[in-house]
Length: 599
Image 1 (cartoon, helix red, strand yellow):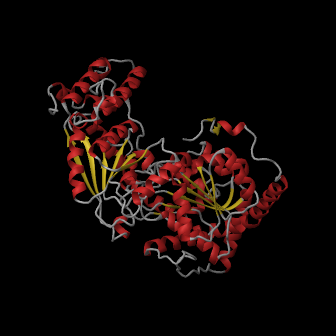
Image 2 (spheres, one colour):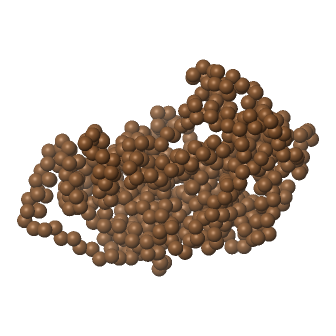
Image 3 (cartoon, one colour):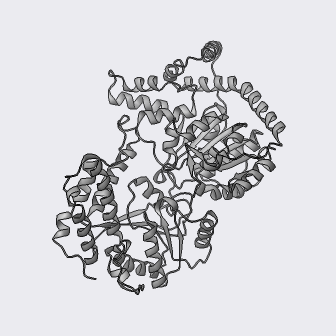
């Protein structure tokens, strides 16, 4: 759990930073950073502009909105050079500079070559391959190429979610063990030891750290002239923090000096013009410096939608690479998704009725505007808990004495189905990942696994980093007897490779469908040799049907990604009052006319 922060800064940020006995070294580092920035800046800008203008003159419009007179001088110089000779483009396609004798797939080599091409032309970009296609490997191989083929050892800064730190460290050791990797993480004393012993003395090639650490240690990190700043946003974690140019993380990163930047994401770009501009501005501020000019260009009244989309494609093409599994990973069988609609038990029906009756005026839409939405959100949460298991409510479980027995299964419709399903899956030799939004539901599932004598592992938001790594290793080791892995969707959906499992059970659905996709792809990724089957539990004739319906609508919008003509329509993040009311009322009449499944 990250320490608390105030105004975007950690609570311990007011404490003294690392000791000052390296002040001279820090001044030299800062001086070195400034010299490097001045030396490479103009050459990089010329290469970058020439490359973009060679693709389409459309970029001239954006570049010329930059008020910096230096930019105008560069444009004049480019036009002069172009009038004297045709630009020449070289570059044979190549495998990575060093991958420790291991082999990359063809599409990964193509991704590597794309990254190399970006570098050669001074361009920053977005590697947006679908989850599970090896974006981490392609990135590490690219840094290996820079080291072995270009003589560029660093320094590079790689920012990742805290949960993926260990995975990045392992992948570097596996593919490019000669790269000196510094993982900047840990308690304050441990971090400051690393800062004094390695960071300030530049005893590293690549610094891998988390977003939270960047905010805490920005005073040290901003002194470097980074070759590459790479941000593994993994879609859900920091997309909004980078797209929102006013967020603390975005503002801090924009202060760092770097020759190039690379964003990594496994989820599609959202279909919102301003967020897209913020990303492009982060990658290429000298090209995309004016959001108003960008919006005006694509929102002009004289342009039809098809023209807007075509222009947007031409702008995005140089910076964005996205491949999906079905196109490139032919050896990976497509995942099979099955929605299981499940009735409620008698106990669940009684609790569902009780929740609705308790706030009947809010359910009928009679509450005040502000109060009503707050109450509706609470009702939604209570109904979702009831759909999962009535024992999530105090007083529902029979006792005392409290015993784990068949009642744990029979008092929840989903548990009845899960119990039958797991029995068949174990006999078939499958291994199972079970995801839920609720850590307290995992407590119930843990009791169930003990009762049925299923060996299991567990990860939730409160799992310590070391315990998380140990659980993953224990589940994945050859001959592991662990049958079930219990995970919360958000904590277990990032930075985990669990291809030793072939069954994914979504006990409940996330509001954000991308989170569920992330969860599925813990098993459905490179290295999976079986067909992955995903079972999604949905309570029939209840609120969960509406939650799933809304998630499906949001997913369709997300997948339009811009290229299908919806560039200016952003998917709504939060449900409004009417949507919440519709969810609550869905199936309510049926609930009051049924007794539920007998226990």
